[in-house]
Amino acid sequence: MSFNTISVIGLGYIGLPTAAMFASRKKQVIGVDVNQHAVDTINRGEIHIVEPDLDMIVHAAVIEGYLKATITPEPADAFLIAVPTPFKSSLNNESDSAIPEPDLSYIKKASEAIAPVLKNGDLVILESTSPVGATEQMAEWLAAARPDLSFPQAAGENADVNVAHCPERVLPGHVVRELVENDRVIGGMTAKCSARAVELYKTFVLGECVVTNARTAEMAKLTENSCRDVQIAFANELSIICDKLNIDVWELISLANRHPRINILQPGPGVGGHCIAVDPWFIVSKTPDEARLIHTARKVNDAKPQWVIDKVKLAIADFLQANTDKTAADVTIACYGLAFKPDIDDLRESPALNIAKQIIELHSGTVIAVEPNVASVDITDLQLVSLKEALESADINVLLVNHKAFSEIDFKGEHTINTVR
Image (spheres, rainbow, N blue to C red):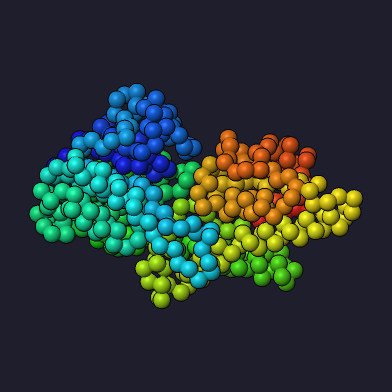
């Protein structure tokens, strides 16, 4: 069966680029999102997110009639679900011992939304990063909504509707290229489900489509990001140790990395984004007694922002000691960078953003921020300013994200906290 029409549910940082890539191959693509602003923006041939080269691809696809966005799902031959998979409570507010519980309600709503337009021969793929077993749960929700159709969990290879999991594995800022070039892990609930998913992705994927089962595909994405999280936790813990021992951690890492089999990552203010800061919890929530190292790494990285806050408190005290004619209310603190990583506009789970919020809460003076990749932030008492204005007016500088825009600035002076040198 060919895939003439493809529907992508969720037009965010993964869904929209994926929809655009199918449309660029002259497939009819229907993008679905609950955000009316996103739908209207896309239908004008524009984009509501920042991603290099994506704007040109979307514009061409819309103008040529291959891509449209809508609020309500329409019939298609394949449905890709790329909706958020958050937790039922904020990760930043969890106690030291609590394990956050994954929230699959967005996947459930997406399943229930497409169920009425499903037909015999359709393929449904879950792309959302999810805990192990989520694809099977999605298939159960679809089956409950459409008892007139058969699904793999009951009918196996003879199912009317095929179901698979294919996690995204792309780097923000390089999504367009990596969607095409990266290998894809394809986890079908049956061999037929996998084969049809491979056929679909080969529409534009030049990398290898590696077939496994749904649970292993789910775990593969979680494993990749958990490994990265553990490596970052080592670097972050090392930076805290070195600070206590009065050792330059960046020099130390540079020296250690001269060993041919050592590659220590760089420390920072924490871990952010909707992958590395989130995915390990999916493993921990399923196997809390076994995932001890992964859990510890999460706690180390989640604690790093507080270490930065403590540094800010010390910097305020040092400044006031050196300037006895001033009070804390007279001190202006500038935060450089709010995104979760350099040179993107994504603020999801950003430790830098969390640190800026905490500084506002503890500090009675002015707090400003420089974030060249966003036009505004919805944070009370935080003013976005230009780099020039921040450097001229700030008493204390806190470098949180190593954006290219800051590369010419020396953040080594007095009353300066550099978390990402």
